[in-house]
Image 1 (tube, helix red, strand yellow):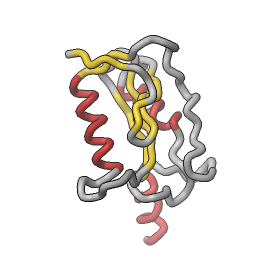
Image 2: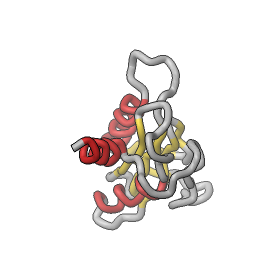
Image 3: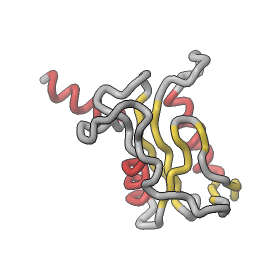
Image 4: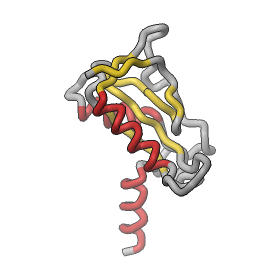
Amino acid sequence: MRLVAFASLLILTGCSLLGLEPSGTGSEAAAPAPSGEKVAVTKATMAAFENYKYWLTPIAWSKPMGEGYFAVAKDGRSWGLTGCTANACIAGAPQSQDAVDICQTRSGGVPCIVFARDQDIIVPYDVID
């Protein structure tokens, strides 16, 4: 029963059992942003990103706490995330490709890129309606 609970926790936090690597070494090269090109994201996607940031770091905590990736579809309408809210994931660092894969599943196949690592946006963007 404990093994099932532990596996469920890993799935819910987005942490992977495979590809164990030290914290902070997840690949950002899963889906690079087009160089010099801004990504257009909807207000709803930006709201989801804000929720992701609060999920990583509770409002009562004054410094960054979690780690993860937030990916957006190139049309700005869909998103995906992976990460852990604790100081370090239980079983390895989150992988950027996991967030991209989730995003592409939700987008119906629209290509996705890594938008943010942890709480930091790593691509230029514009917010659209």
